[in-house]
Length: 158
Image 1 (tube, helix red, strand yellow):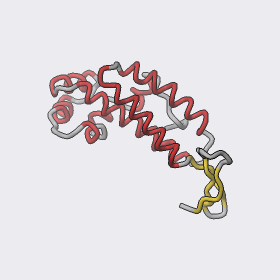
Image 2 (spheres, rainbow, N blue to C red):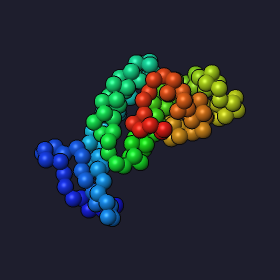
Image 3 (spheres, rainbow, N blue to C red):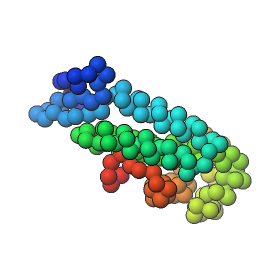
């Protein structure tokens, strides 16, 4: 990746500059990424008894503020990764919320997933984090679905 050249002047540096060959790029410090992930975990953990709309409303304010502060970093791959990770957390939270295979199948069918795929996924013994990556959840709970609920992205075009 490269050597670290300099950090921001404050003791709690949140941005760092990295030498990557002949050019220097601003990246997000690892500690800041860890804090972001921890805060998203806290918000989505509470999603068990809360509607997805309320969860997304809370996420929206946090993500917008975070994007306003870190949005000018020169490593968009990290922002794309975090946006995808947030969507995975939401898919897993919804899967946990649906609880029973019968409810899961009905919810997937309601979201437009094919019946056979919905049945196979709902009857799966795999955990929510594994199934968050499953085709049925990617189709039913697509990026467009989350966008329609008002979930912002950390980078445009993601």
